[in-house]
Length: 327
Ligand code: NDP
Image 1 (tube, protein in one colour):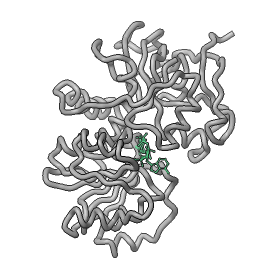
Image 2 (image 1 turned 135 degrees about the vertical axis):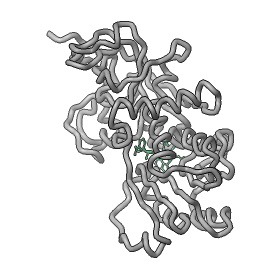
Image 3 (image 1 turned 30 degrees about the vertical axis):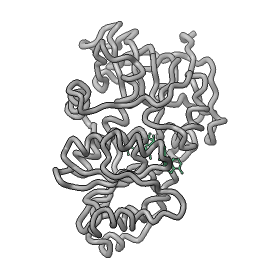
Image 4 (image 1 turned 90 degrees about the vertical axis):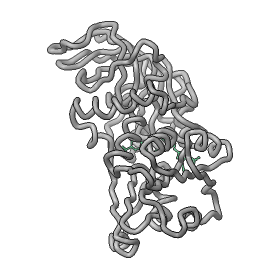
């Protein structure tokens, strides 16, 4: 009989209530894999898309893709890791568990001084913010970026990276408390994009009528139109998520009438295709942490057993920065 572990499964497609905490068979370390004792799992919007059925999945499945922990066993062919090593990862399905198997060539080593909650907070949202600012659109000094949900997990990191690259950030948030956090992360202007606010016009006013060089939109359905209107001639609109819902199909001619815009819909997997690319992107993040230009915030920590509550908080806009689960 397989060794047992604790895990959170999505039993069917649905709301947070489909998440069940219980006992499951522990995975084994396959060839090229590490079996890791999970010390902290990162909560990301993609977990909610996979739970709800927005992204097609088999059910039941153990939720989660990100985390940090200690290597328990190494699989065949793994030579550069040993039991006891501290690691973090961004793409290991089944991470809301006490054990998970992770591809050895896609993990990051966690320095001794960094605790596991912090280590679980950075990989997915950090790498995302990094590729958005350097890959999807290469931010240059003097450019202006619109960052929606600027106090969220990706938002706070993206704001800091754009500032580090010499850009100006206009952030949107839903509350004054979140506005303070976005400003503390370096956002130059922050405004509340609640009911009755003309988001596009506000951004145009803040840019002398020109619009932004790049609009980073992870909110999706509720903000996409405004993002289109707020992007400057020949600017980039990077749609990278749908926290408010997915954007419905739209008339591509609007990119023409909007000023010859570049629209992309990227995903992290296309920007960390190889271990070398992962190392290159993560080295910018670690450099930021070590030299102090990058700071990040674990906003909320929940026990693993309360994963459903963590999802309710994330989807209910009650979180800031990173949400982490601890077994
Ligand atoms: P966040 O911490 O940013 O949480 C989402 C935020 O979106 C909320 O806090 C809220 O901020 C804002 N929001 C606006 N409208 C809604 C709504 N109707 N329901 C819920 N939230 C809303 O989450 P993440 O940092 O984990 O992810 C942000 C986005 O980035 C998501 O869309 C996610 O899918 C995407 N993503 C994309 C990746 C990619 O490679 N393409 C990788 C990682 C994340 P406020 O209260 O201020 O409005």
